[in-house]
Image (cartoon, rainbow, N blue to C red; front, side, top):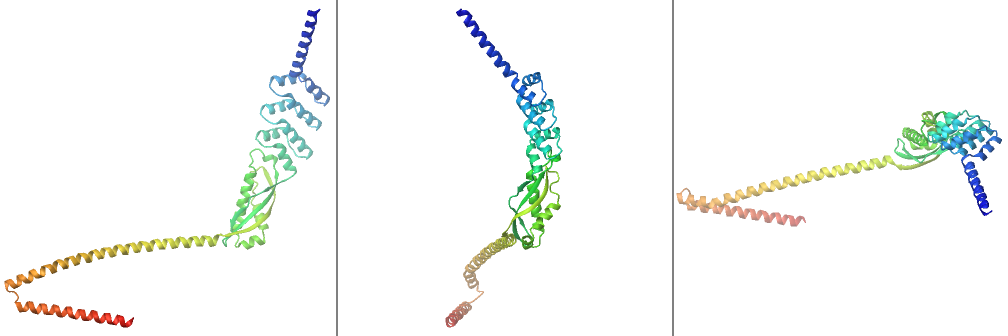
Length: 330
């Protein structure tokens, strides 16, 4: 009896394990849900998904939503998109949203948009409900040299046809900023921009900035316009400062050349003085030689000394008179 009871327990456990593995590997519950939802999918198809390492619920649940929405989608397309790394649920939601909004969107295009890394559901929503992109403050300078800072709001709608390969929001912001700089830069004065800010939006819209992007620009509205620095005056000040430094450098160069010239002249004077002193040192020798050879007499020598003494006296009197005159002038 004991052995029969143990055998019964073993059989029950084995049956439970078998059923557990069976229902785990074969999603019978999911098949039943799909069947009563009107989705015709075979049980062996679900088993094949398991063998291909595809989670059946990731395919069947979106397929149920698509069927209830009236979309005709094949299991093979959804499974192929899943194996390619796409988000099947998002693609199906986007197709349903596009159908409700009367937007032409095929599964192949939606799958391509999803595989390209874009949120296809968000793209459909933006196509229905336009999105507002706010640019940062763009600084531009008018012709009068005054800086103007402009902030714009760009209303865009997603272009489903250009989502694959089209540029994103960053390109829109960059192009709008370029248009703002061009418009403000061509204005004669900053006052004209402040008085008519709509001239910026009109000029930017005429440029067709949405070409090659994934969006269609509906409107460009100027949200804020502020007056910044006087760039023209600052540039003139910087130029004047640069000219001043150049003039100072040239003056310093001339001063250095003058100092060098002065030093050179002083050196020449010192050389001439040395030569004079050297020549004066030879005078007594020449006088002695002349006296010895009889070329001059003693009286001639004394007459020369008297002339030199008289000259020194006249020079001293002249210096004294100049000193007295200077004192009187003071």
